[in-house]
Image 1 (cartoon, rainbow, N blue to C red):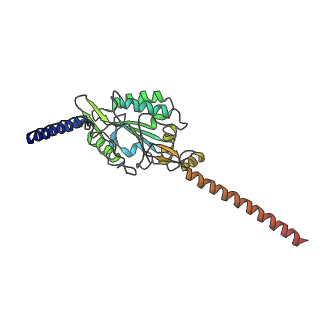
Image 2 (image 1 turned 90 degrees about the vertical axis):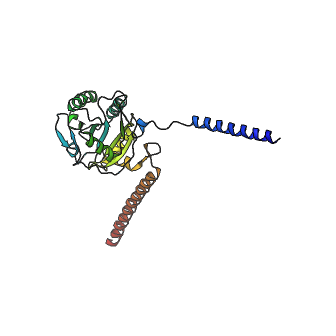
Image 3 (image 1 turned 180 degrees about the horizontal axis):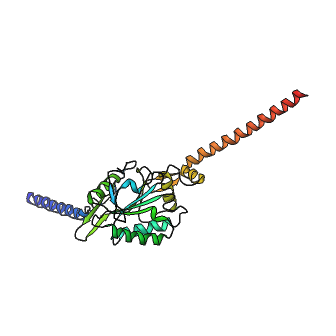
Length: 278
């Protein structure tokens, strides 16, 4: 009887061991090594060191990053690489699709800075990419407000670290693993907003630029809309903020009441003055 108990107990242990091993096999695989450093760590409000970081423009001239960011314009920053066979092209095409729907134009209301994460790429490739992209954009005068930059590896890494953009080189495929996002900067070079993906809603891009400029671009209607919308990180988009509308409604009511009472008191004073004159 005792031998039967031991046999049953051993069989149970073997079964549990087998089950545990099977469960472990069913666990999701760990993040592949080549993707571990390819995410984005948001650094909202982070100030980019515009003077210390240097990049080369499409003409082969090296300049501090400040040279490509004007103190009156918000900036769309995208870190890509120009020979990318997949994701970067999708990101640039998605950005172009949205830009074409905006009545704002790069170099007028905002600027765009595209930076290659591949230090092997040079200004000649950046120049070709710029020519093709601006031709697809199809708006005059944009070349002064959309820069395609290349740089040394330490400079690229410094910028990427300051905005929280991770990327990693895969030697086997000779490609870079990275995320897809637009990073919106204030005219002072501070990180204002991240817009993720390769397709961007017109509303989100417009609101992000308006927010980064502190309402200095756009019309009064845009400023009112910015007041009524706020960025919801849960959905990655700007959504209607009902409380702000209630505040505006309350303010409008107070203004109407003030106008009414001022008008009423003015009429009463005139009537009193007429009576006294009689």
